[in-house]
Length: 239
Ligand code: PXP
Image (cartoon, rainbow, N blue to C red; front, side, top):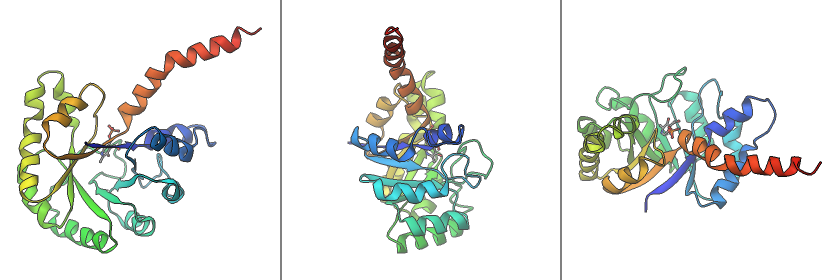
């Protein structure tokens, strides 16, 4: 079965918006694991507007599933993951001020850069994954870098899904098959949600893991809303 890693950046963003410790990120990660998630993902960005670097250190001891840290491999990021030693690092080519990740690696242009970083992470016994657009042309050099996995960037799939799910998924299937031929494992993430996840996970061969943040938190808010409104009404009915 495909593993679900929950990206908790949004919880950190909510906490940061009030300056205190609500919601408590560590409690949240603990509960997510108790509820059955297979892993926790964080994506520290240079300005720490979501996950802070200290959060990553504090999360490490409470993670009893799989810890995946994603981000652009600048020196600060590499120092962080070398210290924390998560199970997996997902390398993402996002610019420091990008709202969210918005493209995969060009593994041909960045081949030497990626290869060097991946060698360093592998020496530290960290599994590596490269964030990739669904394009078979990037697979050969992705494999040559020594990466263990690719993470398919699924924004395009999610955008096209409502219009034509078969067209939406077609490049993802061919890219996944090419990756399998080169011995790479397959993860996926970005804009996956309760509507589009089943079609994706049943069509992509050997999908090992998905990481989901934004939609999962929005859906949790919505699916919990009726319950919370009723709890407030019930408390207020006591006067
Ligand atoms: N994978 C990567 C590389 C990401 O940057 C993100 C967003 O931080 C995700 C997966 C998860 O995307 P979403 O929040 O849309 O589920």
